[in-house]
Structures are given as structure tokens and as C-alpha cells.
Image 1: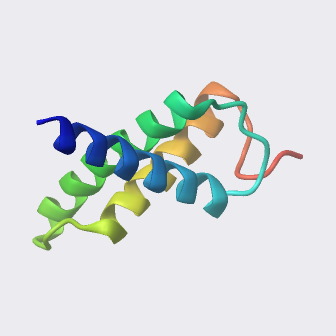
Image 2 (image 1 turned 45 degrees about the vertical axis):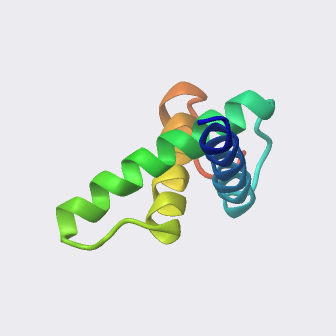
Length: 84
């Protein structure tokens, strides 16, 4: 059980960090927010995979996290992909 939780946190951190690298610009996020972004992105990626009939994996998890980060910037921070 502990091993599963540690793997989940590390996976969320990796996916969240890669999503933040994929979209340039400043993001005032800490470690916990980056992990949450990765975990939520994995969930969204899994749903996207189900919708198109593919098995969700790393690629869909990353796409979901990038989508969430874009939507967060667009609607919460009220800016586009890059700061203008």
C-alpha cells in the first residue's frame, strides 16, 4: 500500500513537471500543486483514452495535464499559453 502511494506521488510529480515544461511561462506552483496537476491530468487523460477507445497511458496522462494547465491559465489566471 505504501509503495503504491509513493509510486502514485512520483508519477504525479513527473507528469505535472513535464506538463509545466511543455507550456512555457511562469507558474507559481509548489511541489504539492505540481503533483495534484499530474494526478488530475492522469485522470483526465484516462477519460480521454476511454472516449476514443484507446488504453490510457503516459501520453494521455501528459495530454490531460497539459490541458488542465492550459485551462487553469486561461480561466483562473486570465491569460493565454504565454504571458503577454
